[in-house]
Length: 121
Image (tube, rainbow, N blue to C red; front, top):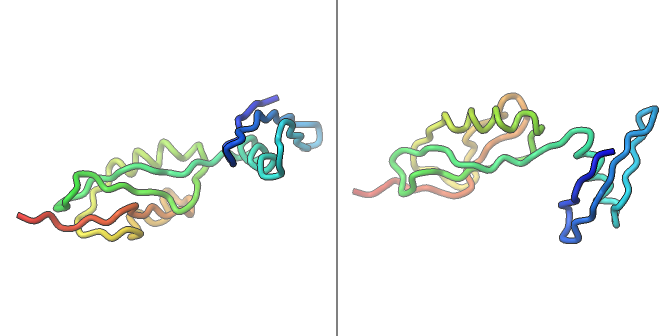
């Protein structure tokens, strides 16, 4: 049995997931179907949304916040972050610009979470 706290809504149900013989999965503790789906996904194939920063040259900011367009498999998260820490972009950048397409073959694009203009002076 594996236990989770649901993050789908503010209720934060305490969930328990039990894998049965034959591949069936039972979820208890959820007050809604969304919580059950969350628990099954978290048990079978956990995913996380990437939110971090990348270096940027010539901008009014030192680091550019970026975010993934969808969650990536949890086991790829650290590798994706290490990859992004090595990236440097050049201003100007508009919010929503793709910074890294299909990061590590995950099918997820990394986009700018804000705009950055060219530094004056």
